Length: 528
Image 1 (cartoon, rainbow, N blue to C red):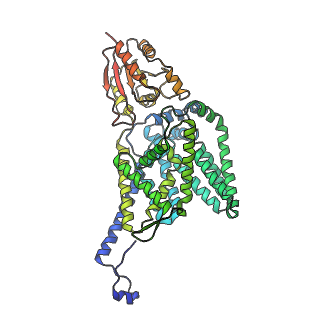
Image 2 (tube, rainbow, N blue to C red):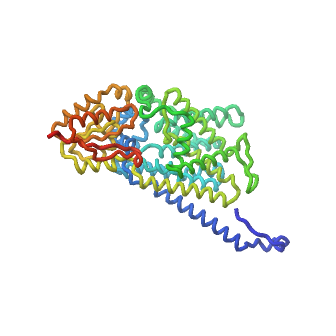
Image 3 (cartoon, rainbow, N blue to C red):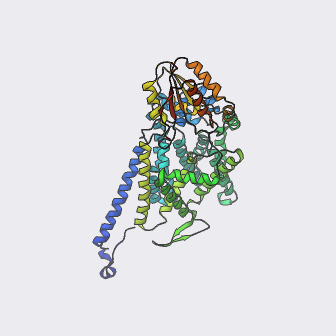
């Protein structure tokens, strides 16, 4: 907001126009410069969507290894992985054009993340005009969570783009009788359901809110049309139902413990801000802005009034978010499942949109600039870490050690099998790779009945089998003792190998403080 000083002469002669004092003029120039700097920083967010030095970690390597299968084999592979197929089919086509390198496979997510920015601008313009539109774009462009998944070969950036497109289609279809908007609603609904299962909760929340509109004569006709479009879109999921049923019965989330609803909210808020104490501050600011968007009105430049009945501006968007979370929590309680903040892709766009509205609750231009500036600085710090921090010790240290020191015919054993996909992605091809406990292929993980299979494993017997297969070759053992359902087993294998080959020595030290995916690497040379 531009401030001007008015003299008595100016008050009696308005035709002369307002005159700015040097102080006011300087203040205005500083504000303009601040917003310009924020705009430049937001533009950097485009570059950061395609820039990270990290090697692919487990989930990414799994996605790539499944996606590079022949199209007809992908559905069966996913039955044992636990995801719907659309992203994998899209990535398959992408790799056929751009290749399978780390940067190439991640670029698909980067493109989706860039595509989400104009969609966010349109969403922001709907709820608060151009000011909210640009604020929403800045928050999305430099959000650490968004930057992370823009540089990850997973489906979450695609989900964000679909959510924003679906939101725009639904809102437009509620206002306009055009058939095209309804077709868009149906197509995006089906695409979301076939991209990530948390979209089930988002679609359910949308159906509930549309059903509530049926009570009013003014909104009944439009709501009925959109509701029908959503239900038609759900039909795209029907052919996948048998695979979904199998996954629900046999895969689940054996890699993590069940989680409490309060922990879900804490994880989401923290990860929205990025890692470290700065990330927690950014996450807290974002959540406070969301609350202000929902409950606060500006009285003047120094006061906000709280409306416990909520302010309508982003009431619908946050109602969708709340219902999505409620359905997700209910499913977790019933199935004893778990939650990761990446699942929040189905509602993160609404939180950032509401946060942008929350900024506008302050009438002071300086205060807006300071708040957005803090979020931008936090985003740049998160972006810097995303660029420089390697997500996996396997790619950064273990594989380079193996490629430099292993000999043809040596045996590389991964315990658990979850280390295999990242550990073999760039591994030399003249060694034998095995995955504990099946001693099978290391490029994928079979999650079907995973916990039961691991509980039945005999670490000492499996270690003896590895020793037999290795013969007079060196055994390289990459392992970590922090994985659920393997409690103590990888340590037991290490002890058995060390007993048989006492000259074993650690070549890479597990560094869980530095790497998200971390592991030891032991070398067990044959006995003299």
